[in-house]
Length: 219
Image 1 (tube, rainbow, N blue to C red):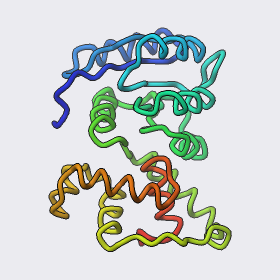
Image 2 (tube, one colour; image 1 turned 120 degrees about the vertical axis):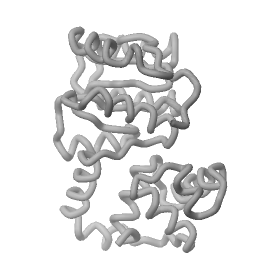
Image 3 (cartoon, one colour; image 1 turned 45 degrees about the vertical axis):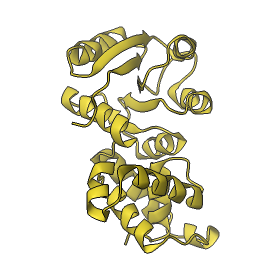
Image 4 (cartoon, rainbow, N blue to C red; image 1 turned 180 degrees about the horizontal axis):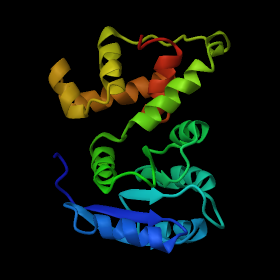
């Protein structure tokens, strides 16, 4: 496992019992430290100003400021925080909406603690954690938008190397794994990923993958 530094985790959920459960399941995990908990969206935004976590586990439905509005505010001020949505809702439209707005992962509250821990580590190492839930939602959204290409023509040209890296990203390969396949350093892979995001006008890796699939670059 690549992570070696302490990861500061915050939990935002209006149900204390759930917060307690998550805290207990993560408190003895290697590398993790629970920084603080927030009981609603307003409390969340206040505590972010006091102590910034590395990873935020956040529900969607919260009093005062819900998760949808909160993620918009967070992405404007705290670009480096990894946001993992942890909610009861597995609605496919909501999943793609939250990922497009800047979430790094989307999990339901029935997710096993081991997977929550893995999502935290993966987001810290590789920015995003793509699970079956997210992949299915993205694919279904694209299937229902078969005509989108005629409204959004693709003037973007990716090099052969970029396309190869893009396909590996879509296969959920880590930066380290990609670097070994294409024989480039992890730092170079990160630079190429940023360049591809700029070309596609995507803010996140999820947005880049959806752009590629929409324009049939991953067929």
